[in-house]
Image (cartoon, rainbow, N blue to C red):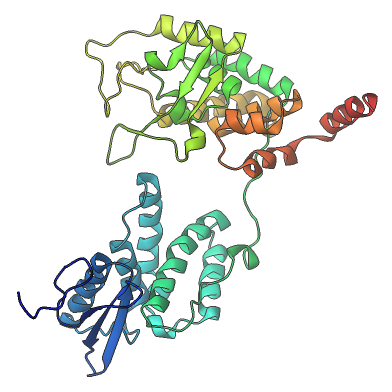
Amino acid sequence: MAGKRKDRNGRVLKTGENQRKNGTYDYRYTDSHGKVRCIYAKTLEDLRKKEAAIQRDLADGIDYAAGEVSVADLVDRYMSLKRDIGHNTKRAYGTVINRIKESEFGQMKVRNVKLSDAKRFYIDLHDTGSKRNTISIYHSVLRPTFEMAVDDDMIRKNPFKFKVSDIIPDDAVKRTALTKQQQENYLRFIQENGQDNYYDDIVILMGTGLRVSELYGLTKKDVDFKKRLIFIDHQLCRTAEKPYFVKSPKTSSGVRCIPMSDVVYMALKRAVANRQPPTVELLVDGYSGFLFLDKAGMPKVAMHLENYMRGMQKKMERIYGKSFPRVTPHVLRHTFCTNMQRAGIDVKSLQYLMGHSNVSVTLDVYTHVDFHAVQEAFGRAVSNL
């Protein structure tokens, strides 16, 4: 191996590869027009991934460095280098990537994309029915994709370096918590008209603020009736590709202990007492003994409750008409958060119970406190002055 160039770690460098004084790497090659190009990377591994992609493009007659690739091809390149994507995020990305490929914008040459083109693409998406939250997913793909093109010296500026909120209005449906009377009416309706065993599930969600996947991830080991605590450190999920899998909370803030109120305590007691043990307990990623099972003895997942609540909503509308608000699992979580805030719990404790990584997420709930609640809070505050 005498005479071979090596990096500081003793690894042999290939033709065109070089380690720079600051420890990063570059690779020089000749494009299809005979012009010498150079790409950069922090590690040799990343550099060689880029090299392989360039060689594939050159073999296919695509001039990557000159920006002759399409937006769709550039997105594919960026995604091929991503490894730190969660399962749900990957699914969301997959949907928008397919739509980019099918669009006229996706066929544009990267070097031709201007700021106005990027904004027009988003505006057209919004005009054809896409909500701002959905367009934000496009942005989370396209902005770093074009930033990679800047880093690779394909283009000088990133046309997606702007905020979606600057051009697309906030069209998200505002979450509204159920009033105390609505909560009572809803639970009574479920208890009197529900055909399946979801009443306790709903009571627990409304009384703990748990996410549905957290509730259905509960096993016998996660509930301590003596201390009246629920331990949350995982959630049970399901997709079309994977019937069951366990995942950790999105952030460390999701790991928490939830105290049981008397109502939640009794609901959990009933759930355990009514649970029909299956012949064989399903083992999912090392977890078994799930508390909430369907009629077939398999663990429930979010889809079960969502479908059930949609059916109950239709029944309610036959009686109440459209006057009764739409109730979803997330509305139950939102209602719990609002109830706790109105009861006077401090925001940091509420943040912990909700498993929010940032207190601003918790504070967003306060925008839905009605004037009557504000008036009562004001009265309590004034009386203590």
